[in-house]
Length: 590
Image (cartoon, rainbow, N blue to C red; front, side, top):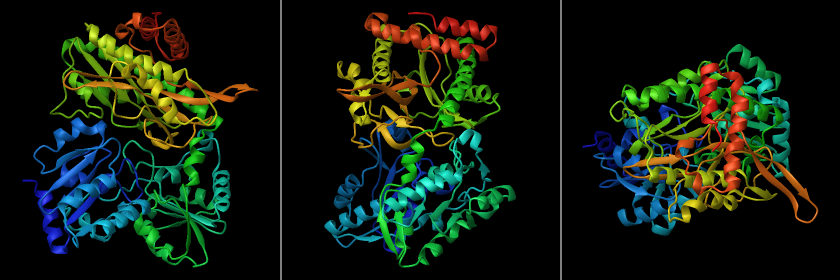
């Protein structure tokens, strides 16, 4: 019996609740959350970054996307939850379709309104109306039944110097307010943690792998208020904020503050990010629209771009030492998947600007590589041997940039099928990285380039091809993406995106090849307009032992060799003689 699930159902009966939806997020709609808000994990046992649980009095299900299918099957076993598969993200319409079969007219569906955006809550209200359900937005089970709940994180905020950020706070606040006023509003409420961190050049460690602090920010031309636990703000940070006329108020005062806004105010809210609880606390006029901060921070300035380049060099050098160590020790049978992560942190940690990993390393050996977001545990960690494929997806946070790279290598004796599959993935990866495209192109228009080699052999992968990435911020950021689902945001110079096609064969192996790309200006034409292209930022060789050269065109062969020449040139100054020799061998022409 899942005791936590039964405790929830007892509370539901007491409160007259027939069904509850439990997202895996926090009041800031974060992808990755602190332990304080992991109630879904506590109830279900599922730990993936994307997943929504729904509990009725006699059934329980969890919706997640293909990145987590295998992980969810393992973690939900015996939990009382049934896995529901979705293409991408938990879809409320699918959840409501399920609920329409499981609960009845006049039954009460409950949510914690602080964990649902205004848009999501509005959709739920409409769907409940269509089905005759009652919607309660004030159900807070975590506060009532979660014993020993982790406290809200209290890590101190710290300043991200302009020498790394490339733009001071006053400039960012001014550009943001200009966009707010253009929308017809005179103030804005910002709740997304990465947006607040970027806007105020503040960082913290409240969330694993993402250097943010838990806070809200309100801004108008007359007032600037940061809502944050006061013990996170030392005298240096307080003085720094006051220089930009930013007042500090306690985190829990946000609702009371909003409730007192002048009825003549016009406040801008992002309905996909501001919670229903905060939105309902406002009595003044509202302008709904995408937060301007998201688009502003997506365009990296020259200081940030140069920071990425330097961070990738140091990161590449650390990876040389990591993969050398793997090759030297794998055949001995003395290291496992967890050891790979620990060694990676050790090598990256030798750099003074390193501030931790940007996500939990995925080190998947053989069949574990087919679990897209696999996390090794003491119970599951496989011991490496002298053959088979190892997929390593890792990244780091440096003061001057964030990194994210995936390499799949052979530990010996690669099969012809492994080489064939690896080369198919590589061909898609290469095609995307050399793409030239007109201004106004969106990610969905480019996604097919990475998938076509696999599609031609009736194979594909379920995750996106590219996600935006922050600068000493979240490894995943919007508003742009490269994936099969429609996203109307066009790619622009200064945007950073991943390029990571993959192939996963359950019970056998997984293959993924990932670099980080920078969108740059390309050729300008009189007849066809201006074009854009990509600069590859990541610096680390592909495993040429897995490349079936006969499958590559001359253009692709040249592309690999040219890239390896750049990798060798850029990383060599960071390496000793033994490391240089290893890298030179890995960068040999194919």
